[in-house]
Image (cartoon, rainbow, N blue to C red; front, side, top):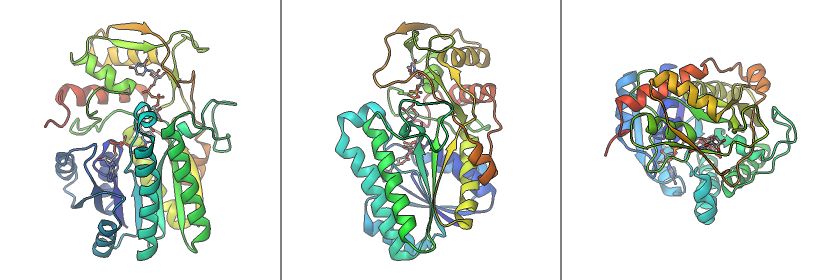
Length: 337
Ligand code: NAD
Ligand code: WQD
């Protein structure tokens, strides 16, 4: 297939490019480089010997989208481009609605103009909010606790309504749990622009000596060891879910939502233990107050993805920690300047 990948230079997008090229799909990346560096694509090319067309531009820009779709004529779009920092989203809500919702609308309008009828969308388990039961299945009520989460849920609604109203159209909405880890080559991985918001890159920066200690946000949750539990998913497993979703989008009409997780949850302290084992570094830590908006535990029921996409995660917690450490050790400054 010819696949237009918005946000393809980002953390999840770049790993997905490797999997797409490995399956002989043709790819075109549209990225503004708001949160990525062009060198990422050189790494993807060198790992795959694949050809990547690149358009540097904004997903909200209809004329860029028109030119891209005229030249590349995609069979399907994978839509990663978006803003993703939960804390920032409450300080800059209009930016988040604009990029995440208006960006999706602009993309759908361009797809309509060019007759492209398949889209895979990066949604998030954060759309569920406080669990009424666990593991979350796709029927769990949605009630996101952040502006970011609301932009993702709103984009899901837009895509669902578009797919219902457009003959022959399909939208696969992937609700990712917590993506971590890096490519096995250690040439690609997560490269936070400044202060890492997420647990795994923070631990990795402590291990490599860039930060003195980890702050553990709360040890009084109702979990086995009192620290927050999440369903961490290796980024390569997540990337492969997109390849499976492309095939699925070709086979269905309308919208379908899928949880993409492992079904296993690990606490902050279990993540630290795994990273200590992978890196041999002590990872000093201190218990800090709870972080606003955090919940105790999240866990995916990914039965639907297994049954309908034929996808399931294969990487273990040790794989996640070892690959994240190999990437961080080999690239202490990420992709550099
Ligand atoms: P990322 O920031 O690494 O990738 C996003 C990419 O989109 C970047 O390359 C960035 O330059 C690009 N981009 C941003 N705004 C753009 C715009 N207006 N026009 C064109 N390109 C633009 O993030 P990621 O972790 O790879 O996440 C990819 C997607 O998955 C995002 O939509 C995110 O919300 C979603 N998601 C991420 C996580 C996570 O924890 N990483 C979890 C659930 C969902
Ligand atoms: C994991 C656990 C923290 C940092 C976020 C977004 C979600 C999705 C994935 C985009 C929690 C604890 C963290 C630290 C800590 N992103 N922690 N010290 O919050 O589950 O999910 O990223 O779509 O929408 O909300 O992930 O990695 O920030 O936190 O103790 O320095 O680690 O409290 O229990 P989270 P996280």
